[in-house]
Length: 302
Image (cartoon, rainbow, N blue to C red; front, side, top):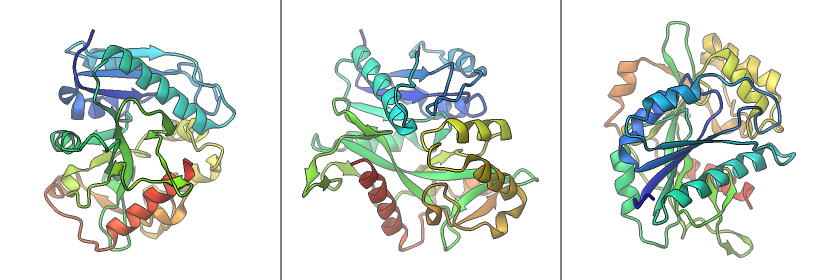
């Protein structure tokens, strides 16, 4: 029986293109990791054919601290409910393995921590009243034909640091996706007293989110099976994504569900991304816009 305090969960579906990078960014910093997958279908019910993601995870697990669970997670007509259900099952399983668990880190297989030690320090510094940590994600949307990463940027041309719930206390049920339940204040969720959103995170302490930086096969599969598949025109967005490889200079306001949340794209070489490591975001209104985005996310979970 595990007696450690920091555990992680990961939900996977054909993530062979990114999962090793993701694991490498946090594996040494957690005590146990539960990975879950549905080998037959996605959250929308669309059938899939598994790739070698699980083989890569098993080969990576040099310390024998990863447990993989497979199951049927298509229980509801709404894809988001299936997403949340699978994550909750995964967290519940982690809690059986780590009865004195203090924090659950929820990381997807296309997310890469740039400074996991700093993230951990932020978690451990929180009082018991804080039930969740919202962190910043720097999003890679596609690649140019010469191999540069197309990063989503704000109106000033700085990489957008999108807020997202990354960690939470284990004994609260999930409301939606990775967001733990929240108390009500005047009939609405009250994030202020319960979630921590650090005011300023340098680019080099964010997570790199390879949300759409994948092969055409995997992007098409994602659009058909992900938790927002009932909200997005998969064919139209797939065509937009393909065009972004060459038409990125003119692409504007292209978030799949909140168009204005993703304003534009900017190409970066690997060296240029690394050079961002110690820079602070310079856009004065960045926190305001990011907090509004989080507010919409929380509102949608009520």
